[in-house]
Image 1 (cartoon, one colour):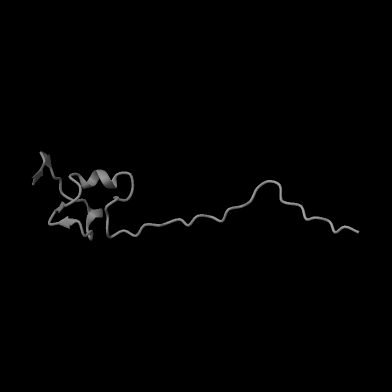
Image 2: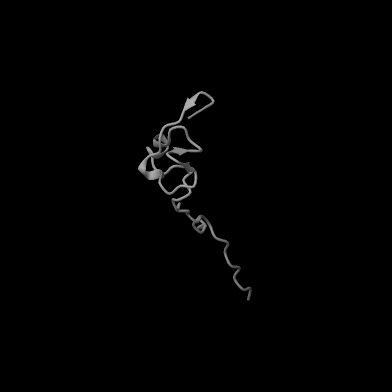
Length: 71
């Protein structure tokens, strides 16, 4: 299978279960093994990604002083 002069390589074990797999080849990447080398494939539909919620901002520095009641 060639697309634009690129020869597609077969999928790796981590690709199994992905919606982009058709037969033994990936519809998105020509070399699926390269996408799994540094971690999770960016196009994997079968892997749940962890999302980090932003932490609450902590105010640093001077706080406004309360005015003392005048006598």
